[in-house]
Amino acid sequence: MTYEAFLQLAETRHSCREFTGEAIEEAEIEKILAAARLTPSACNSQPWRIAVVTEPEKKEKVALALQDDGMNPYVAKAGAFLCLYPNGAAMKKRDNPKHPDDHFVKYDVGELCAYITLAAETLGVASLIVGWVNPQKVNEAVGYEGEYTCDLVIALGKSAEAKLPRKIRKPMDEIAFS
Ligand SMILES: Cc1cc2nc3c(=O)[nH]c(=O)nc-3n(C[C@H](O)[C@H](O)[C@H](O)COP(=O)(O)O)c2cc1C
Image 1 (cartoon, rainbow, N blue to C red):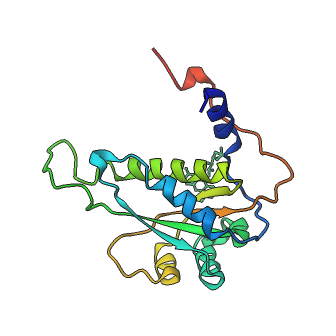
Image 2 (cartoon, helix red, strand yellow):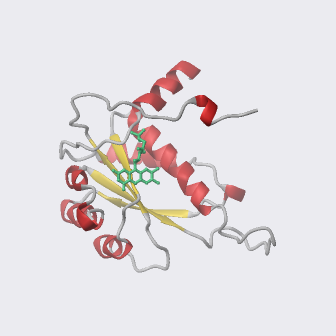
């Protein structure tokens, strides 16, 4: 892959806030998950479980779990959801005085999001990372009774947007320094 191709992918991947309501095919989900599985993580701890939600009734419930206080109305038309359950216990116990064993989990899950959303984009599947999550409602929707808390959900779907939203980013001199 060339740098130009990657840059174009990074520019095209964006937060989709207008989905068509179309379902996402099983094969597309499988491809996205295959890429997600390759995500790097601290000490290769892979601290995540992913609840895959495509079934319409469950989907509706997950969508509602992302809309507390009137937020994120657009997820109602997403075609699938990947509910991320960070697993703070995945890292081998190290008793490192510098930081707790789950110190890197959020970074790792951030990487996971990047792999998922970029892989989805290559398949023509739009995505939205949603942090406004009601974890209890997600658990009820997906039937999860484990000990981890879902605090991030990725909505996947076909885009109904007329055009790509403008990318708003800080200027380079506010990001990198030497
Ligand atoms: C951890 C995280 C949580 C986010 N939560 C939400 C959310 O709850 N609702 C929403 O509309 N966008 C959410 N976003 C999307 C960001 O607003 C978006 O990525 C940012 O504005 C940059 O725009 P772009 O993704 O289109 O490049 C979230 C993004 C991240 C990385």
